[in-house]
Length: 206
Image 1 (tube, rainbow, N blue to C red):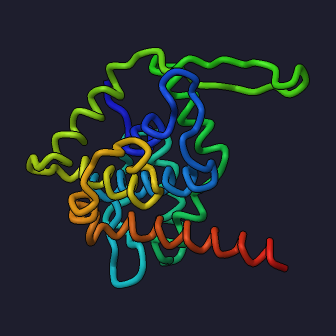
Image 2 (cartoon, rainbow, N blue to C red; image 1 turned 45 degrees about the vertical axis):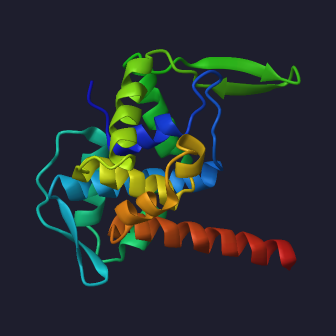
């Protein structure tokens, strides 16, 4: 089945057995919005023009999530990719993507009680074939195979979110860095994450 780059990132960020996040939720959410931008860029809908994100064509992609983001970008003034990474980042995006993966049978939705009081939702894997395909592609490229644009974008975003070390702990750092170099979407995600972390430090100190 076909999944978006954002959904691929999400599958990599979930533990297969318990469906728990392997990285900080706020960091993941910024990476997911970057996944939306990366998908639109690969589809030829958006590009980087100088320091700003530009719409190459507003024609719909045919995916509800992607088309909604494209419409927002097209109807706004020119802004930086980093601005859009922050703007598209919400808990709702993650929840919508999780629900889509559950509705297509990739994930299961399990609700349990924590401490007998709080309702907690877990998303364990139901169909392992989808993530297995993602990992096979990424493993081959990380091992030296000729990279394709989609897998390269996914690796770059995973690196920006610090997910590469969690999902592929044995991958060579030099190879990951080589593949991620020059990816403007991943760079925007990395800056947004750095700004978020800096703001948390300032808040904690003050």
